[in-house]
Length: 164
Image (cartoon, rainbow, N blue to C red; front, top):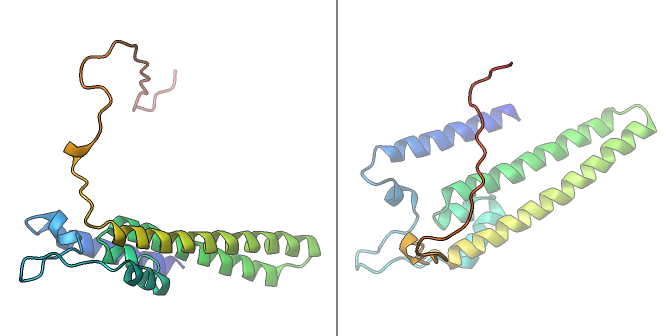
């Protein structure tokens, strides 16, 4: 399991570090490329769902969301690893109470993995469906456009590790 995690981190590091050398990181990481005619490529929501059904996160990568792709893949892979580990512990358990304990946690991990997998599919569908949606910060709704009367509560935490 540690080897698979290390390979994933190396892959992501190569992907991001290779993109940093480019002139524009946003253009490199997005999957939206215009056709030679100048028209943007349409993203298929069902294509994104099918990709994510085969490999969790592939649909998000197709829709131009590499961070979400990594989160989806790591979530499903981590829970799958938990299922395998809990199953091994069920086989190795010596008492009935210990076996029931690991069976319970394996069942919970299966349900969580199924839920994260379905969320992965839904997110891939929505990402592909809304890939052309304009998210420019100038379109944001700001409720207060001037000075506002009120009070502010601030907490400061020392960054040094000092003991009295």
